[in-house]
Amino acid sequence: MQKDNSAPSTPTSARARHRRRSNEFPADESKTNGHLLLVNDHNKYRSMWIRACSSLWMLGFFLLVIYLGHLYVLAMVVIIQIFMARELFNLLRKAHEDKHLPGFRLLNWHFYFTAMLFVYGRILSHRLVNTVTSDKIFYRLVSRLIKYQMVICYFSYIAGFMWFILTLKKKMYKYQFGQFAWTHMILIVVFTQSAFTVANIFEGIFWFLLPASLIAVNDVAAYFFGFFFGKTPLIKISPKKTWEGFIGASVATTVSAFVLANIYGSFQWLTCPRKDLSTGWLHCDPGPLFKLEYYPLLPWLPWTEIAILPVQWHALWLGLFASIIAPFGGFFASGFKRAFKIKDFGDSIPGHGGLTDRMDCQMVMAVFAYIYHQSFVVPQDYTVETIMSEILSSLTLEEQQILYMKLGQILQERMFGRD
Image (tube, rainbow, N blue to C red; front, side, top):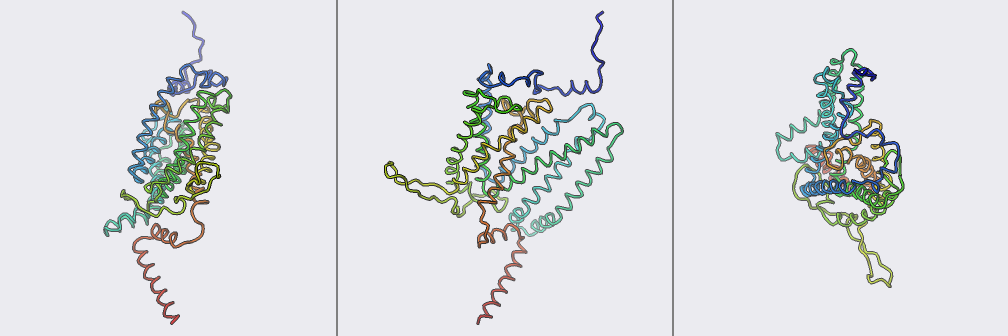
């Protein structure tokens, strides 16, 4: 009988075998970069076909949601975030330890939905009030919930915190506190970007759709330029990325930004902000950003002038960020996956991996789009329109009535004072 020289099985090695998945890297995959380039991949056409079919399916679903409006886009964002959280929660999950901690997974989701209630409650509270103003009873109920929303969220978190302390078990402390820290990091990553994403949606779907489209264009362009022309590796932590793909995608994304801004800017449905949570069709004054300006051309050209929306100049900056800076979100995710020796965060999208794999650059882009919009697009000086918008979005109906009465009294006193 042959002697077995292998090391005895330990709980650690058993857990490692248990956690090995189909999306794990082969042992020699990270040794060199050259053989991983798409131009050297013998299965690249099959991979491209799977990726293209999945992309077309996602595009069709995305366009349908955009057509349905702001509330449906918000619902899509919430669903995506739940799947992202699920993928990230499972990343450090160890089945052996979880067997000794019944209900520990449920605690993660308790913290998740508490954070969701806090973040979305702060963002959507006034829009919810504006939606239910016609029903006095429901209006009072919603107003009370909004008033005490922070208290509810705080004590919900404290309940989870106490739940965690009471479930601590000897010899499991390190794993439990590691999971506690990991859960909070996920909440910060997911809900930080979600807050900016939701804010972009209600400023006008345009400010959500354009940045998201630019990331998609950059991703597709980088894939195809790297597929056909990629020869020079770009960065070690993401071996399939090439300089040819990066540069080609940068040019394609910047040009696309200028063109797509013109197309999206011609639809009021995309440019009008939403002040409530209704689903009705929107009509508004598009504002100067979405009104055509005409620029004369050189006399020897067949056209005398060209029509450009002012928002197209802003779109160029978004395009540059999407093509140069946002990909580093993907590089960060690639390094993160290599640290845990996995190929993808999940396998929910054939050819793409998990939803987290598709959202890495989107998270960086959503934050920049909001900051850019608030810094360079929203007027910094006070106008009647901005004050009225702030009143309608920030004050309840009762507070608006009180403001109306007091403002009327002040105006009457000033008028009689002049007489």
